[in-house]
Amino acid sequence: MKKQKVLLLYDSAVEIVKYNAEIQSCATSFRRCNVKLFDSLHLASAEYANVDIFLTTDAQLIRTVARSDIKIRIATPLAYYMEVLSNEQFGNRLQ
View 1 (cartoon, rainbow, N blue to C red):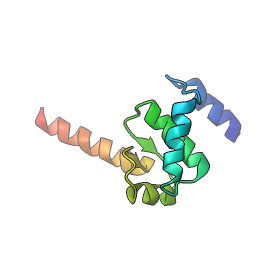
View 2: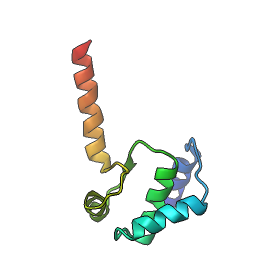
View 3: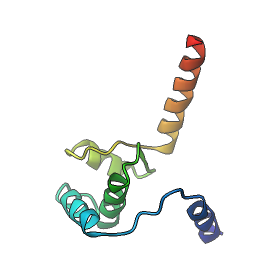
């Protein structure tokens, strides 16, 4: 069931980021900031793709990134949802 859900998300992807030397180099620099191996690859891929925000439920990863000089924006899905909801409500008041 979990694999099927992941495959459905994969099918809805607009852009597929393929591993390359630039991603590896970026991931290596994230590793120097104490980011775990797979997290560093995910973050480096997101940065390479110029994503607006990296969503995760991993509180340790969020704390690690917050204490580092990593420039990618990171948040929990709930925090991001609340931000979007707040922005929509504020935007409606301006109209």
